[in-house]
Length: 298
Ligand SMILES: Cc1cc2nc3c(=O)[nH]c(=O)nc-3n(C[C@H](O)[C@H](O)[C@H](O)COP(=O)(O)OP(=O)(O)OC[C@H]3O[C@@H](n4cnc5c(N)ncnc54)[C@H](O)[C@@H]3O)c2cc1C
Image (cartoon, rainbow, N blue to C red):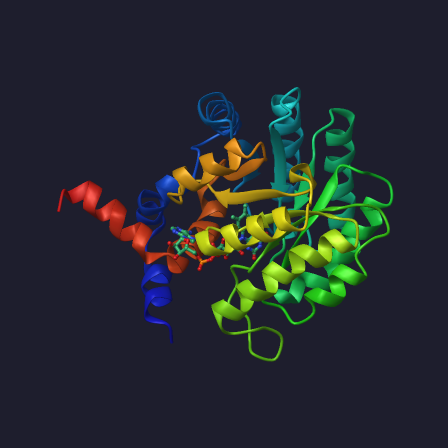
């Protein structure tokens, strides 16, 4: 059993919120909008705003989540520097594919009317097939819809080949979920090497890669290679999570005239936020240590 994961799993919700504070904009849609405005005004950064909600089960709670997303769209319209991210487990996938797809379609359609882009986050490998099916069905009708692929999964090269005939925005990341060895690489170096090659594969298939990593050597490797290949700087972008300290690197991307986008989550109901926050803390105990030092001055 992974000790750090067990410690984080046993943490009570209120403590998780303290440790995870650097990763989240705050409570309510207005906190997400204010953070997106501030990041753009001060630092020239773009945002993808996300409601912290996963493992939402009842129809009532799923509908409440859809309504939050519809209000977010109203709140974020007219901001070309903002987009929205969402997860199938917050939108009814636990009930059925048809129900979830219908909810997704309502959100993507409303966002299309305001020129806002929606990204469908990717969850653990049990959801990969259904997430891709829903994505493709809706992408046939709406251009403002993108997806996430995870370079650690063996299947991702084929998923890129079979993605879509239209040009898609594709966030390519190593993937935050620990996956078993029969479906996934186990060594981070190999995942990052795959990610590098899959950026090129996405471009070759006519897509727009959103390179989501905090690994500075990997970011530099992508920049150097893509410049050397003469790839236009508006043919791809970089993405990172709010709260991970990469200010200098982010500003370097901005100065190259490229989009540097941060993932900006906010909470409406803390009980649905805790899964996400625990995953982040288990991934990065260094962040928890930093918060402890700030709190106790040690
Ligand atoms: C915008 C965005 C959206 C994402 N969406 C998804 C998704 O839909 N599905 C999915 O499975 N995964 C998603 N991820 C997570 C991603 O897959 C990786 O797990 C995560 O970004 C860490 O991998 P890395 O490439 O940064 O490499 P790592 O080797 O994990 O990190 C490199 C370095 O960055 C720092 N770092 C990385 N993460 C953190 C952190 N949380 N806190 C503090 N420091 C950190 C550490 O110093 C670390 O040494 C997303 C990531 C980003 C940036």
